[in-house]
Image (cartoon, rainbow, N blue to C red):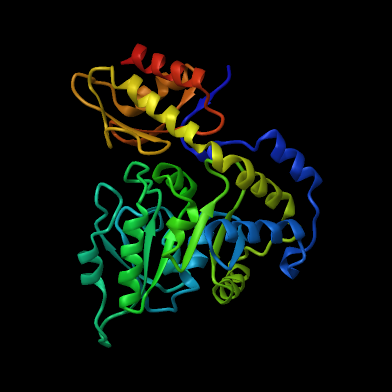
Length: 344
C-alpha cells in the first residue's frame, strides 16, 4: 500500500532530477570554502532574497540559532512571538547555547505581532534589564495556520527596529510559500530584514538543508558560529546540488500545493462537525478541529486513517494539521477526503 503522508512537507522526498544532480555534483571542501556547488547555492539564494551573502546550514533550527547568535551576545534579548517556531520547537537553543534571553509576546491569529506590543517590549537602558537587540518574526507562520505575513507588515516591523537601533531576523522557512500567497518576489518580503533563513527541505523537496542570508559582514560572523555548533560540512555539494534544483524548479510550483490544500479543506468542510482554523488555508497547511457531533479523538481518527494508508499530523486532542507538498497529487487529495468522510 502506498502511503499518503500529510504530516508535514518535511517528509517530501528529493525529485529524480535532484538525485541526478546530487550524483553529478562538483565537490570540494566547504570548510575551506572550496565546494563550488555550495558556493553556487549560497550565492543564488542570496540573490533571490536580495541579500549580499548566504550560508548553507544543515537545518532550519541551526539557521535560526546561528542567525540570532550572529546578532546577539550573551545577556541580550530577542523579541519574538509566543507561537514562533524558535520559541516552541528549537529546544531553547538560543538560551542554552547563546545565553540569549527571549521576550515572548502574543502572536495574533494572522501571525503578526502588534507593533505597539513590540515597542512596549523594548527595554529601556537599565542595568536591571537584558539589552533588547533583535526582533524575530516568522513567514509563513506555522502555528498560526500557515498564514503569510504581508510585505507592508514586514516593512513596518523593519522600520520600528531601525527607529530603536535594533536588528530584524526573519524565520522564512517557508518564505517562498509566502511569496506565492502574497504575489510578490521573496526578495520583497525579505527586504526589511537584516537576516533571513529559508528551508530547502520542506515544500522545496531537497533532502537536507537551509540557507541563512544577510550582509557579507554578518555572514562572516555566522560562518564562525556554524563551525562552533558543528555545522561545518566537508563535501556538502552533494546536498547543495539538490538545493539548487529546489530553487530552480520547485519555488515556481508551490501554488499547486496551495490549490490542493484549498481543495482538501473544501472537501472536508462537507463533513458535519469538522471546523477549520483559519477558515480557508492561506498556503499549504490545513488545520481542522473535530467538533460535536463527532465523538472520536484525533488520535483515534489518525489510527483509522493510517490503516487506510494515510498519515496525518495530530496537533491537539481533537485537532489535525495536514500539509500538502510535491508528492501529494490530486488523486491523493480525493482519497483523503473520501477516507475522512467514511470514518467521520
